[in-house]
Image (cartoon, helix red, strand yellow):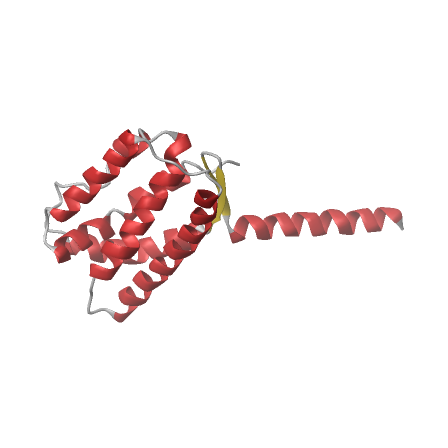
Length: 176
């Protein structure tokens, strides 16, 4: 009888942990720990990626450079992600347009996901767990400057095409 109860508890614990993994991944951004549904983000990004790349007229230009993003100190990753998400919500998603209804829905889903992550980061910021020093703020300014060199539509397409780079950078803060 006791063995059956222990088995049920173990099964329940296993199912719960599987649901937590499926529900979201823990990202450790300096002192800030948030849960992010990376599987949903990956799915949405992969749905729009090919279409956006076909629209990109500036293939040689990069806004999000993986080597530059990796230079952001772990302690400042929370602040940097917060700036990037605000940038995407306020500048990129609002400027991106497409005639394809499916891509508009996917973009809207991404924007909503980013807003949700931003909300979690805002709590860390309020608890003084998010801060950026000059180098990280400069890194973000360089991204914005590259965006502003293009027309609004071209810049939005370029940034949408680089969402996979942002997600890869975010994934680097996932701890098992």
